[in-house]
Image (cartoon, rainbow, N blue to C red):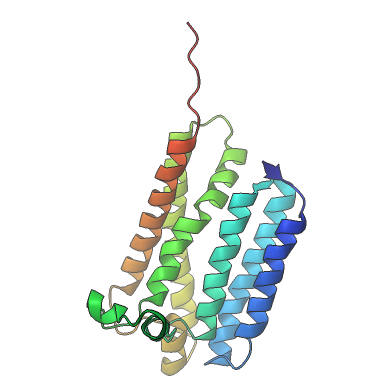
Length: 213
C-alpha cells in the first residue's frame, strides 16, 4: 500500500527518531562533528517528507528509511569512529566481536554504509518506479544499484570536501577514516552489497505477470 499522508504508525516512528535525536544530542563526543552529521539527518528528513507527499511511499520504505536514520544518529553521537558496539556486545553476550573477526578498527561506520544500501533500497526503488513507470523490475533493480553506487561516491566527495576545511583532528573525527587508505572504497562496496541483497529479495517477491494463451 502506498501512503501519501502520515498516519499514526508513521508519527510513532518519527517520535522514536525525535527521542533518539534528543538523547544523541546530550554531550556528544565532538559537538562540531555531531552537528555536521545532523545536518545530513535534517536534509534526509526533508527529502523523506517531500517524497511521501509528492510520490507516495510504502510503509516498508518509510520504516527502513527511519531505521537507517536511527543508526546514523547513534553513530553521530559517538562521531562514528568511537561507537562502543564491541563493549556493548561483550557486556550483554560476553563475546568479543572485534577479536573474533580480527578487526583492528571500529567497524560501526562500515555498518552504516552497508545499511544505507540495505535499508534505503525500497525508497530509491519507489522513486525510480514513479519516474520510469514503464520499466521492468529487473531494469529498475539495476538502476537502483547504480544510483546507490553513484550516491555513495558523491557522499565520499562531500565528506572529503568538508574534511579539508577542518583541522586535522576535526577532519579525522568527522571523516572516520581511522588510517585506512581504502576506507572510501570499502564503504561504497558495502553500500552496493547491501542494495543488491535487498534488491534480490524484493525481486523474488514481485509477482510475475500471468501469460495469456
